[in-house]
Amino acid sequence: MPKILNLIAALALAATPLGLAAQEMRSEWDMSVAELTAMVERLRGELYRPGERVPGWDRGGANPDADLRAAGAETHYFRTHRASGEGVIILSGRPMASFAPAGWRVADTYGSAAAAVDNPFIQFDALSPRYVIGLRAGSERRGDVDCVDAIANATLYERPDLAASDADARIPLLFRLLLLAAEDQRVCTRYQGDARAGYRGLAFLPDGRALPRLNESDERITIIPAGPIERLVTYSGQGGGT
Image (tube, rainbow, N blue to C red; front, side):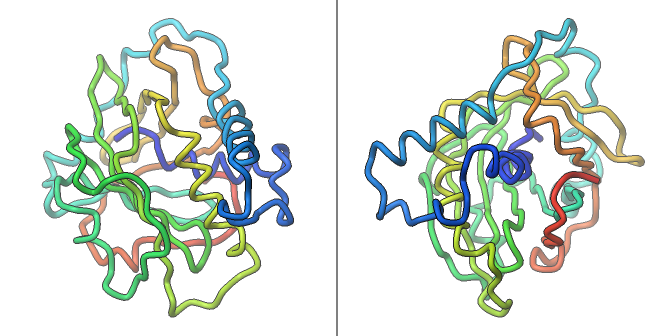
């Protein structure tokens, strides 16, 4: 269960210091290649700026995936809890589209749904009341940490039944920036906790250097019975972590 969705919380935190103000949130089609590349590099440098190397960083971590599989991966999900809302992580090789509610409209896509990955997982998280991001990637257990190389594919969903908000205008570009910034970035996460109390994770580069920006979100993850995705993915807009 690698830490991908903390990128979303980190992106919200990074938007202001990176100068990603509302007036800068144009469509990628209205930007030059140089402008888009500069924004991606700026964001990548902020999100993945390494901290100090931590001795023993890949030892002593919990194994949430093993706990969920013991409970039944077909009947249980992970749920992420943050002050900004709640999301879902599913350990499954099924297509992401098979989990998405029929009423959600596809607003944008990234990558290939046919791309093969090892130990696949799917994540859904709200970017605003109206927009939800879905991600599919693969993971590797390395020592006592979970690592992910890249996002195989992603979809930006729109919930047409919900009212638009002021934040919606910049969501499509933030979706694209987030995914481009994450390309070729391998992140490993060491989790602490257990199935009863839940888990919290710390993100590292593969050489053991911590990733302070990704670790700012105090996200907690629990195991829950599977249920309707549209009810489990929520948005509160408060930012930060729980």
